[in-house]
Amino acid sequence: MNATINLEKHFPVLLNELVSIISPLYGGTFIDCTFGAGGYSKKILENNLNNVIAIDRDNSVNSIASKFQKIYEKRFKFYNKKFSDIDQIKKNDIKAIIFDLGYSLNQISDLNRGLSFKSKGKLDMRMGLNDFSCDKVISKMSQQSLFKIFKYFGDEKYAKPISKKIVQFRENKKIETENLVEIIESIKKKKTGKNKSTKVFQALRIFVNKEITELINGLINAYNILPIGGVIAVVTFHSIEDKIVKFFFKEHSELKNASRYLPKSISSKKYFNLTKKKPILPSSNEIKINPPSRSAKLRFAYKLENGCDFKKFVNYFSYLKEIENLNFDA
Image (cartoon, rainbow, N blue to C red; front, side, top):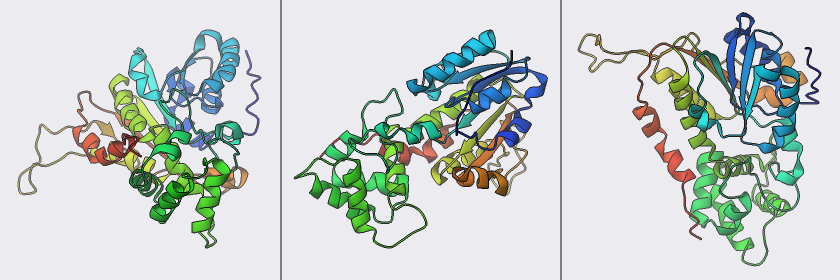
């Protein structure tokens, strides 16, 4: 049956490049960990030999998933879960696991969700299956905690004065989206290429949705359920995500020596085959058609061995996970 699903204005980023990596022409089961508007899933399902298991924590995509279910029937299965729970999905013939860590246009353009600095009213930013909203973060977090969130998750140069002014402002008035934008703009007076609120809103989205913990656990659990020979492909959109994915693949695709003065240990194992060390970037033509793709990076690796414990990987980014677990101590 031919698909008639309209993806509207959403463009799946680096679609052709990703498809060439996962090789869906030969059939198999593919896990789309960030279903969203269904762009990757739709392309994979064009081949009748393929099956897709789709995951998304955002229950607003349920209606899109239902359409896929009607069209593709037994070849498509959807789970409203966080992708860190991928290990709960038991499947033996998985060929590839895909992560697209960007927000879809449908999500960003829904101003009621407060994901964008263009939104109005109550700060939300929840993607689904959350413990708290952004409103609670801005209303309750201490100045020091807000500073850490903005500095480490947004690389915000003005993290200290912004966090200070938020605490001062909320003593007299509840902070809503437009108020937060005004606070940021009152401090960042120099004109820049990006919107002045970009970094702070990015940092808050990461914190509210625990995106660092999700990504770390999602990558580890994807490895654990992936058969040897399968591929993990990840599209990132900001430097923190890319740093995590780069370390995950690189650290576990190289043989390590106990000492540089000793011969290479024969017991060392490579758990991934990293055929391309540098990320794949969108073409100038794709950026022209879809400007948000300009910051995208695609990294991938093939699984070689079972049994990796990932202790160094987890410890290396523990400082970021600690920030995600800050208490509401204001």
